[in-house]
Length: 155
Image (cartoon, rainbow, N blue to C red; front, side):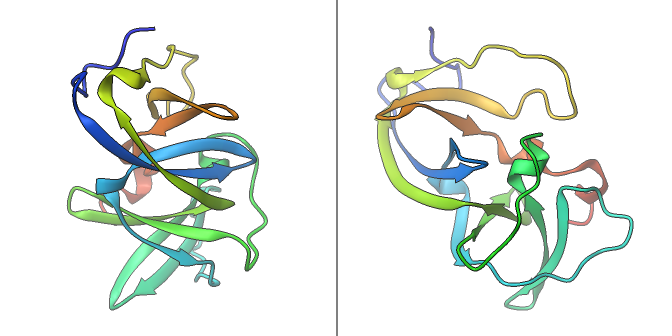
């Protein structure tokens, strides 16, 4: 499979790998602001199913999104063993609830393969590429695509 145009063959990139619904995903490390333990959030009425609520992060109120639910993989039952990955998307910040964070992968751009185009759905272009890992493949997420439409102005 060819590599995505976003990365050059010789680019050295770092990704944080994570699990959501038991599946492997990764996010480019430059987009991650922090990783923190799950703490209960304040629910928002009429929010999309994937939006668990909001939390106060050092004076900034950020939305918390259930990554598995957002990707259509079923809802996560949040517990103290889960973590929140705080991600910067331009001037916005969101939190993604995930099962766990695994490791940091360092790969060359030439090691990233294009993800095949699959069905439509609400978030059709959320996977930027694929990286081979020991357990199979890890999907590179595009966090900006994961923000529900109703939160794009609020996040």
